[in-house]
Every structure is written in structure tokens, then in C-alpha cells.
Amino acid sequence: MSQIEETRQEALGELESVITADALSQWKSKFLGKKGVVGKMFGQIGGIPKEERAAFGQNVNALQKELASAFEARESLIQAQTLAQDLEEGEIDITLPARPRQMGGLHPSTRTHREFQTIWADMGFQVYQSREVEEDEINFTMLNLPPHHPARDMQDTFYTTNPNVLLRTHTSPGQIRAMRELGENGTKPIRVILPGMVYRQEQVTARSEYQFTQVEGLAIGRNIRMSDLKGTISEFAKRMYNPNAKVRYRASYFPFTEPSMEVDVECFLCGGEGCRVCKYTGWLEIAGSGMVHPTVLRNGGYDPSEWSGFAFGMGPERITMLKHGITDIRYFWGNDLRFLQQF
Ligand code: DAH
Image 1 (cartoon, rainbow, N blue to C red):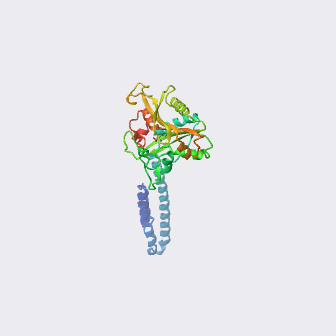
Image 2: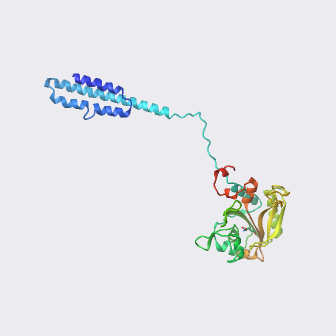
Image 3: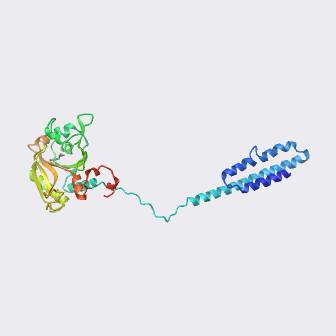
């Protein structure tokens, strides 16, 4: 009987210093486990004199119950303390200022394109989205650039493994697709712009990239003349650059237009006085243009004796660079956040 009392005091004493879940489970197996102290006592029952056996058994039973409930009480105490500690450590200080969230912005080229599109849309031009992966036939031959034509050298081309399929070198092939798709076999007038990415196998430098964007324009009708071309582009320049922008046209050559012209706008940085950007000429080149060549009209499904049209091609990156003082075209597609975040 005194052994039982000793064990009781020892077990309860040790339990009081138990403060972790690990130590608690060690305590449990020491006293209440199958081979634990109390278990062994049950094993002794057989060796106890008959008269004392029942009383001993009852006392060991009582001890086991007492220790078990002391264990449970301790266990819930430890759990409550652990929870309280977790809550305290994980406490969120709601008075701290929030971390700013990074916001995306529109790419500077996208902004210029949207400006272009708004102006051209106001002037009655529809946006036609043509493809970037194009057939050689449409990129060149249909635009009056047959195989081995020397003007093909003006645009070094990325070909795919299929020699008839390439990355378009300009947006002009979209003219053929727009005429064929919207012209309804050469019976309907069209007025479209064709914005998008173009690709050329060029040395990448501060001034030239192997990918850049263009905005092509095309108007086909029964009575379209050079004066329409000049009036339309001059109006665009006024809306895009400034209401008094002067525009000049210089004779040029493109295989898909006849006659062909290059379009200059008065330098919007120096107002035509002459500066470094316009190389002291007072003018900036903004477009190639011309009257659609009869062969190209025919390739688009139109009869050139009844239909005529004008076309132009512009390079928005140059305008974006001038507008924001960007000195290196490689920034545009370099995906450097330090550049992009400035817009
Ligand atoms: N496709 C020409 C180029 O990439 C630009 C161009 C010039 C487009 C004259 C035209 C045009 O539509 O009429 O250099």
C-alpha cells in the first residue's frame, strides 16, 4: 500500500513539471503504458497474500484512474497554452501600412498604337488584323515583288523551315488579304488600317531591331486620287502631331505603289527650325505611301480600270522614341521593368 502511495506522489509530482506535449507522452508511457509502473503493479497482484489482494487491486485501479484523469487535465492545459502562444506569436498588427501592390501599365508602343487607331477610326478607317506568319507569295509576289526582284533585298527575311512561309517583313501583305476578304471580289470599296508586328533579319543596334511594328493604311474606291492620299495623310498629321503641322511629299519608289511618295512632317521637336533629332533639316519622315499599283489591285480582286486606291505605311516606334526621348530601340522588346515602369 505504501508503494502505491509513493508511486502516486512521484507520478503527480513529475506531471506538474511537464510542459511540452513530448514530455507528456513520455510521462504517459512511463506510468500508464503497458509496461509502465502501474501496469507492473497489476502484474504483482498474483503474489499478494489473499486477504490483501482485493484491497490492493482496488487501490491500483483507483491509482490508474486518478493518473489517467490527471493526464487528461494536463493534456488540455498544455494544448490551451500552445494555442495561446501560437496566437500571440502569429498576431497580425493591423495598424501596419499595407505593402503597395505592383500595377501593370500599357507598353509605350501600345499607347502610340491606340492613339493611331483612335485617329484613323475617327477618320473612317476600320482596323484589319492580318497575320504575322505569312506566305512568301503574299508578302512579296502579290505586292509586285516577284522572286529575284532586287527590291526584296531591302527587307532581309526570316524564313521558316518551309521556304514558302515566313515572318512578314512589313504589314503590306495585309493589303492583299484585306482586299480579298473585304472587297467581295472587287465590288466593295474599303478603308482600313492594318497595325501589327513585323520582322526583319537585321543587325540589332540602338536604331534597328529585328522586330518592330507598323501601321499600314489602305483605301480602295471608284474615284480615289492622289489628292485624297495627300489630304488624308495631312489631316492625320494635324490630329497626331499638331493642328498646324506642315507636311511635304517626296517622290520615292515602292514596287506596290505607282507613283510612290515619302511623307515628311515638320519636326515637332524644333517646330521646323532644325535640331539634332531632325538632323537640322526641319523635317521628320513619317510614312511611305503611294497610289496602289494596278497589279496589286488586280491581285486583290479589283479591276484597275474601274477601281483605284492609296496606301501608306508608318513606323510608330520612331514616333514613340521621339515623343519620350527614348534613345535606344532595343528597350522596346527587352522587357526590362526599369524601362517599362516609366510609362
Ligand atoms: N511596306 C513598306 C516598308 O515596310 C512601307 C510602305 C510604303 C507601305 C509605301 C505602303 C506604301 O503601303 O504605300 O518599307
